[in-house]
Amino acid sequence: MAIISIIEDDAAIRSALHRALADRGHVATSSPTGLAGLQAIVDNPPDLVLLDLGLPDIDGTTVLTMLRAVSDVPVIVVTARGDDRATIQALDAGADDYVVKPFGADQLEARIRAVLRRTSAPRSEGPLAVGELTINAASRTVTLRERPIDLSRKEFDLLHFLALRVGEVVTKRELLADVWRESYGGSERTVDVHLSWLRRKLGETAAEPVYLHSVRGVGIRLVDPTGTR
Image (cartoon, rainbow, N blue to C red):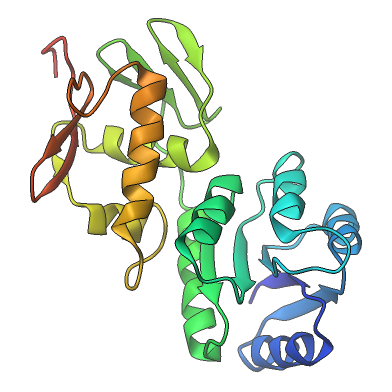
């Protein structure tokens, strides 16, 4: 059982979500606007949030950004916006998963279970060091040559996942499944865009890689340029 907060302006959808969640043993609360939802989450923190993007008072992506400033509660975006740009914006703003309407109750339940498993999993002990790059999962900070690098939530998740498998080639499908929780139907373009942003912040390019090396037709590998790992 999980306590789930629904932020959705459509009364019929709110009611349907309440029924579906209750049938599966969850406790659901709901709010019809972004600001009311934010206040409810702050007052009574849930285990997970279902967030619509098309809210009447404030855009859902803005709600997500505001929520991430005060909470790491898992968020699944539930919306009719199914284009790649909207998906990337929501995930980069801090969403843990993304479900496009219409969807089945069983599909949503599977996504909820997957997100709760991942976000409740214990983090690895201590920071990870790859050459002059240090990734600290506990504080979600990254330094390069002892200088901090400002990464978005998904950029950090991507780099951390690759660091856990340093030296290994990881496919884009694996990254979609493990970082974006898109085991099917996800666009590899999402990974390409975030890799491009991450490379720029690490001071490298795809043509002249230092840490992030593409393996044509296979995937991406994080390597130690000093050769110590």
